[in-house]
Length: 194
Image (cartoon, rainbow, N blue to C red; front, side, top):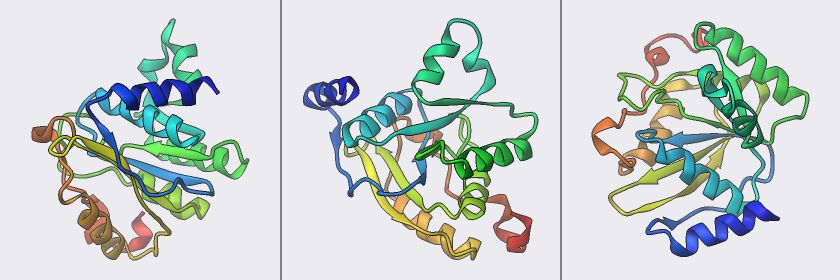
């Protein structure tokens, strides 16, 4: 397959090293974090293509305008209207339940500018579809990236996020100054708020 060949060439000549646990064997919500640079996208595709994961990813609607639209869709993109985030989760849940998505890459820290909180859509999607989460990472300090553990969320938001925080504690991203601590605004609220 062409994508696996491209990935093999990329990893052969890249200064980045792929360190990964085995690829998930069932549909998963793949967290891409820390999301601090547009290079994260290139690294995510290289990881997925090398491991043979059929991925889809959420991207702002403006990325799909004009000539970029067909390319972004071919690379697995799903356009998102950020003005209606609740609808986004519902649409993605419908697609996952129809069996059309294997690995859904989500960058919960949102834009690359460093936010106060992660967006909780990944959590809602995983809980509503019964999909596990896989922790994908980029770490400039070690020039490594890859996939960490895959696990099911328990519904205990604080405990689940503590596990996620522990994994990402030493991961800096491509632009460390833009890193967002893995914390949901809803952690202080009852789980039903998600």
